[in-house]
Image (cartoon, rainbow, N blue to C red; front, side, top):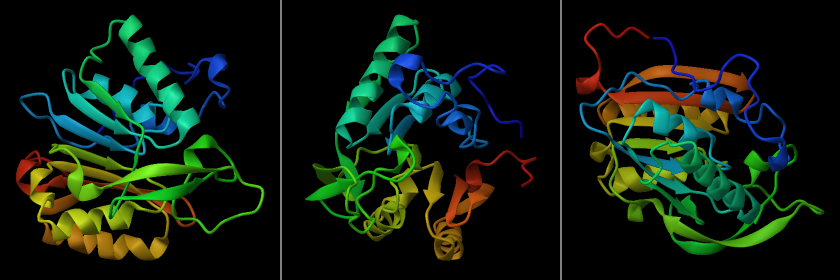
Length: 231
C-alpha cells in the first residue's frame, strides 16, 4: 500500500512564522500513519497529541468530510494548532468539523505537570521524570474513557499511550474503533500492545522503529481489511 501524502517533494512542512524546523513532523504528513481503512462514510477521528496539527492536516485530506477531535495540552503548541486550522479554513479545506481541545489525555482525569522535551515541541510529556531547567506547565488531563466515540484513534502522547489503551480496553471501548495508530516510547511495550490488539480483533497493518525506544504501530479491525491486504 502506497502511503497517502499531502506534501510535494521539497515543499516546506510549515511556514517560517511557526519557528519550527521546516521538516517538523514531515513523516506524518507524508503518510506515516496511513492505514488500509477506506470507509464509505466520513469517519470520526481522535487526534491525541495533536501538537501543531500535522496529523489533523493529513487526516482532513485522507478522509474528506471527517470529524476530528484534536487534543493538545501545551499552550504554545495549541496556539499553533489553532493557527493551522485557521490556515486550512482560509485555503478552503473542510475544517468545520475540526474541534480542538487544550487538554492532555491519559488513563485518568487529573491536573498534572507537562514538561518540555529535549529536542522539539513534539516532546512535551506528562510522563518523563522532572528535569531541572526544562519548561513546565500545569495542564488539565481528561481520562481516555471520557473521549468522544470515534472510528479512528491516533495516539502520540509521549509516554501515556499504554495508559490510554489500557483504560479504553478495561472500559470495553476498543470495539468502537476501526483503525488505531500509535507511537511507542519503550521497546518493551511493543509485544504486549500487539498481543492485546490482536485479542481485541485488530490486525497489524504497519510498523516502524525510527529510533531506539521509539516506534509506530498501526492496526485495522480484521473484518474491515481489504481482501487483498498483505503486510
